[in-house]
Length: 425
Image 1 (cartoon, one colour):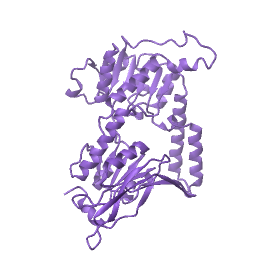
Image 2 (cartoon, rainbow, N blue to C red):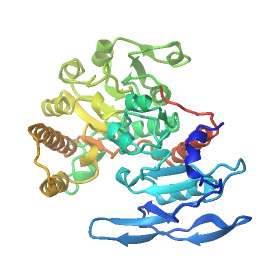
Image 3 (tube, rainbow, N blue to C red):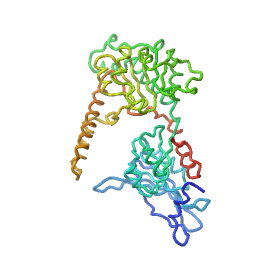
Image 4 (cartoon, rainbow, N blue to C red):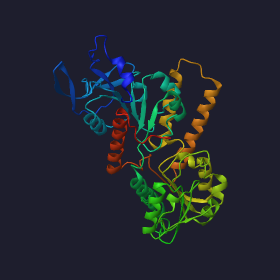
C-alpha cells in the first residue's frame, strides 16, 4: 500500500466514484509557457489541452494560475496526489508538470499560497517549514526540499507530525567547489578592486597587485563531499591543503593529499580558509573574533557553506584591522542584502509594520532591532572593495540544477510508491 493510501480515501464520494476537484489552483509566474493538461472528458477517455499562465490581479495581491495537471486516477485506481511546488522557475515548473502526469501538480509563488489540502510539498531554502505551517496543512505527508540543506525545515516538528523530510543530496558537489575557487581567485587577484579602479580615475598596477595560489596553504574547515572536492582542485593549483573536521571519519581520508590538523593549527598556517562544514551547535560561528585573531595576518576567508559559520561582526572588525585581507562570500547570516539594497529592505519592513493591525510586542520590537543591526552590518561588509560576494548561487549551474530536479522527482515518486528516498535524519 502506498504512503498516501489511507489519506486518499477522503477523495472518494459515497458511491465510490471519483469526484473531480476544481480546475484552477494558485501559482505565480509572470512568464507564459504552455503546459499539457489531462482531464476527464467522460468515464472512458481523457482530453488534452494546452494552456498558458495568466495574471489575475486584485487589490490584495497579484496571483497567476496554472490548471491542475491531472484529474484521472492512476493504473491502481487511486486518485492523484496533491503536490505543491514553491519558489519554482518557469523551466522547473514545466519539468515537474511534465514529469508527474499522474498527479495533481500545483505551483505557488510563496509558501502562504500553499493550500491546506497539500499532501506533498516541494520547497526551496527560503520556505520556512515550522509547526505553524504544519498545523495549517493537516494533509501534508512529505516535505522534499530542492536543496542539500534542511535547516529551513523544523525536523522535530515534522517528525512529531509524521511528516517525512527529504532533500536533494550531493547534487552540487562539483558546482559549489568550482564556485569556491571562483571567489578565491577573485580575491587573490583583487578583481573587484581592479574593476573599480578605472572608475575612480586612478589605476595603479601596484595598488591592484594580487598573488598566486600556487605554493600557498589552503585550510578547509569541513571535509564532507564538497570539502573533499575543493581539496582535489587545490592540488591542481599546487596548493598545500590542511583540513579540520569536527567529525572526521575514515571516508574523509581516502586518497586526499591533505593533512588533518587541529583547528588552531589550521588557523595559524593557512593563507586562505574555506568553510564547508554543516551548521551545528559545534560549528556555529566557528570563525569568530577569537579564532580569527589566531589566523595569519591578511588571511583570506571564503564561505560557500552556511552564513552562520562566520560571525559577521567579527569579520567586519577583522577587515577593519587588516587581520583578514579579504572575504569571498556566497552566504551570510542575513542574505537579503545580497539581493537588494538595505534601504529598500528597511522601507518594505516599515511599510509592513505600519500595515499590521496588531500592536507589536516588546519581544518583536527587540527582534526587529536585531534584524536591522544584522542587516546594516551585512551591508557594511559587502560594500568593501576587498569583499567579493554572490547571492547564494554557488549551487546554480545547469548540471547541478538538473541533478537537483531529478533527485526531487525521485523523492516524490519513491514516497508515493511507499519507498522514500533521500530521507533526512
